[in-house]
Image (cartoon, rainbow, N blue to C red; front, side):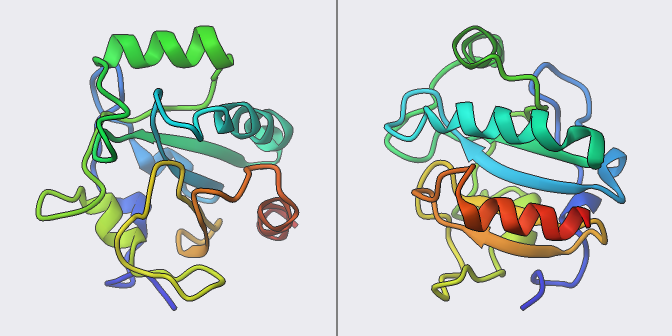
Amino acid sequence: MTTDNGSSPLDVEIGALQGGSADLSQYAGKAVLVVNVASKCGLTPQYNGLEKLHERYAERGFTVLGVPCNQFLGQEPGSAEEIAEFCSATYGVTFPLTEKVEVNGENRHPLYDRLTGFADAEGHSGDIRWNFEKFLVGRDGRVVARFSPQTEPESDEVVAAIEAQLA
């Protein structure tokens, strides 16, 4: 299954966490793991695994892209500055973060319009279920995999999917 309209999720405009554009076009030709993140969630320790993936594969043309979202029980209430400080100080995050957006509903960001049409291995497509749902965008700009929030970033299936894109 492809994204909703066949266009790359990396073709949309989205702001960077600290202002300005996140300029997703800079990731053209790279593999990107897009993850809706939150600072006050039971899954927040996944930041560790996400950072390890980013560090492990960055030189091979891969990045994690964190997308803060406050739609799940208000688990990302902070300002841009608070989010940046938390991610850096608590988890040593060096991967890029976008502005805080909505991933579901009528105000869903266009990035997620293009991601949510893709189904995961269990067949789930549509709305984001919780914080830390993961989408792998391949070097060709198309969504190639979707992983549930509970799937650990360094799990065999995520690593295999990333490695397949970097081969």
